[in-house]
View 1: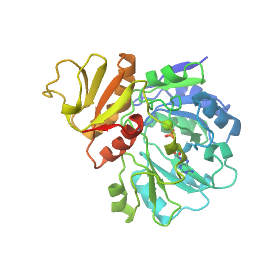
View 2 (view 1 turned 120 degrees about the vertical axis):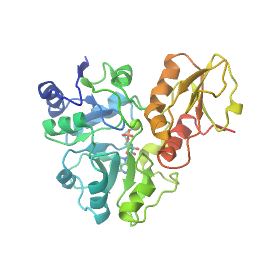
View 3 (view 1 turned 60 degrees about the vertical axis):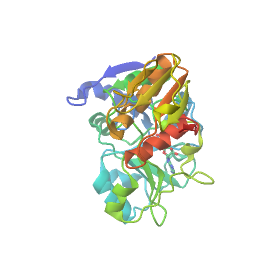
View 4 (view 1 turned 180 degrees about the vertical axis):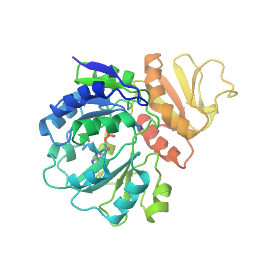
Length: 327
Ligand code: AMP
Ligand code: MG
């Protein structure tokens, strides 16, 4: 049985949230809101609980998890070395959508790190996430709260659709604001390396710490193990389009695009992605799921700008679309 509770992020009912903390403390699984996407959390230091995350999601065991902390100092529970750049990035971007990969300390369960010598840590900005971590008195290991392979969840409804009956509790704290997962930066290399793009861009980080590597794709054996799997896929086939001329209008297809008014469609459903790539990011996963719910078999999604958060959006869309790009 999955218990669903509703928490207002602006006025947190601590007594109710205490129930969720109780579940975490006793080795259970709780889906909770963060500013990026919803996470499926368990006590980072409870090996069995963490293993259950993989079972509930159907996640391959070689795909490590991000541990979420609520106090900067807790980074020391995870990392045996904290390079200067990590301190600077944390000061600038925490709480927020930045995950840092650091050399791990002994005692962190192998299931959290998938047996790697490194560990991923993030301090979120979402009030409910932070309060849950504090009340639980531990760090919370959490991947996205979806079934492995499906689009990441940005509402409690998405978590319910994927995980009802598979987890102990789901906290409904409203929509995730950013809508795509955190930037992952590896701080164990001489020059920090972006393993997964997100809202915080290479440019944003370069302003704080100087050099940052980002190849745009992970080559060879992926260091960010999650990047090799099928990801973010609705049942419908996704195509990325550059020009609306490539779209064949019919009733089984739909379009996701920015500034769609005036695009001149007559016979196709259009989901408007807002005016900017920031708004597009907040809605992308929502619309990919909506396209399935509404029964479409084909999704045409507009190519984002190749800058800022657009780079992260392109990264997610390319996976959803299995690389299918139209003119
Ligand atoms: P998810 O929260 O589902 O988006 O998954 C967490 C992401 O963080 C995955 O892409 C992981 O591969 C990545 N990650 C977690 N730990 C590490 C690590 N130690 N080294 C590299 N990437 C990691
Ligand atoms: Mg995920």
